[in-house]
Image 1 (cartoon, rainbow, N blue to C red):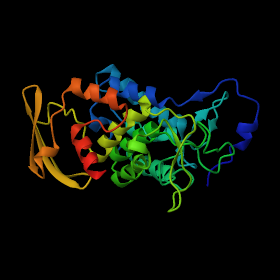
Image 2: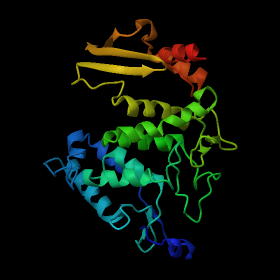
Image 3: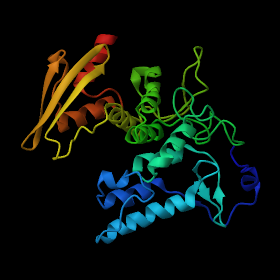
Image 4: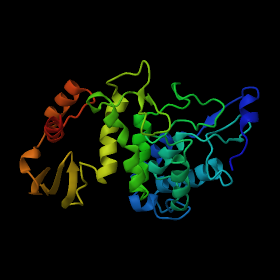
Length: 303
């Protein structure tokens, strides 16, 4: 049962609000180039303070963040601290970014995922910024109940990193309801049923940079790997990759500074190399649409 936060919200404005800055937390962790195993080692401390002062600093940040913002009764992270350093216990989608950054201990990840996928947050077409029970909730407002594609993309990637692949897939389904599969800046979504679908927010930009970028992060979340693989992965095979009505097995391997590939099952004509310059030109021309040649060709076949 969630605590009553209405008294806090109706009180006089606090002297100072301290928001949990998830992007900065992530930067601090990742700027030290900490191994992924250190960030997701299943313990209450992400990293051990080993000779490198940056690692000790990251460990202290991890511990302090979880001490200050986690609320055990709520089973979730506080939205902010008020001027007296009291937790503002409003559920918001922001906490989903913590899963992606690696600052959530493994034993808490499922509780965060379950809360974000609860009916008052999960619409069937994305996770709202604010739960439906909240006094300020308005699904037609910019930041108090609408659905943001880039917000959901970061959350979906966090789901996948923490082992919740099915939930990551569920978050990715909304794009098919919009013209040319272009995700708008934000949209409104009531609880999904057979008679409704997400509706573009009035005045939303289409295309829009954050929303266009979310398509790539959602793809990363669904495939489970980054397209620019690290040097310590010399060979990678993706099996049963579904694109439209097609299914492919593709092997990738490194040849000096380039990645080579071979389609070992499926139609090899569906996959072409797209260099960075062409990729950039296509992105500019389509501005948030389906940019790779592979996806364009499949999309054309489905029309």
